[in-house]
Image (cartoon, rainbow, N blue to C red; front, side):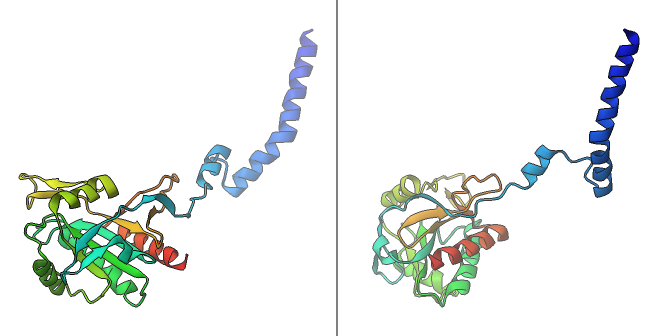
Length: 226
């Protein structure tokens, strides 16, 4: 019986050697011996480059730096980027405005591109103040509106329409708090965004860093071609 067991074990070892040893040798030669198939599948996962539709952008009616009524219909047929800011902001707003200028310069010749900058401090940011703010920034595009209006109305658009939180906060730098994110809206009025490496929608674009500006720049080009 013992001899038969030894013979059986020997046969198993022989079969293993015939089938698997050449594969192991080849993987050593290829330098892939430490990689498993599951990891390889994960590394080869493709990112979905389709721009996701998040929701319809809210309707709005506000007044721009030229004391002209502007509504969401003025942006119909255009790809536009939207931010919430205030002119006396001592922290993130200057960075956001500077990066928005990058987008203005990139697409200024395209009549189908526009920008909306909505103040969250309308008590101070009148049309006259916003006009000077735009001039100080060096804005030249006729399609960049700096918008003001009723505070409660604006806060409702931000918090319940775009879901970009804004609010008054005495402890915050400048007395107001808001995010540094940009919203991207397509020609049909849909809020759009790309997906991250795990294929989850990013929702909004970081207007404070170069990578966020580069990403939204790429996606504006895609939407302009739609």
